Length: 156
Image (cartoon, rainbow, N blue to C red; front, side, top):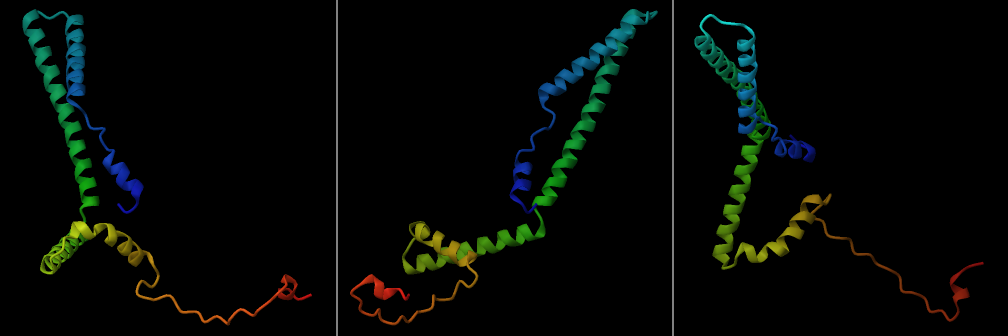
């Protein structure tokens, strides 16, 4: 997961089965099995109705368990993509950096929060420049000659 769109896809992944859908699926399966039970005339009507009800609830439980396992596997795969060893190492480095920064700030009697507005543009420039430690070169310019008319500035 390196691009911004990958992270957006990851954060918007909320198409897991909801409790409302589970209830709807269970009731639908119960109705289907009850309709089948009504079409076939059993010898012991009450026993057959109970059997159909038990079968529908068991079938719904199995189907929902499969959906739940699929969702768990997707969560696991996405978590493995996001939380790589590089992520943990980077987090540890950042935490260490900010701990040291706070420690130095306390020693000098200042606060990081006060300096963030000044620090952010400097860090941005430092990280995104080709040579962050270079100083712009000084350019020596010859003095501008005196002129009285603009025509003197252009050679013909």
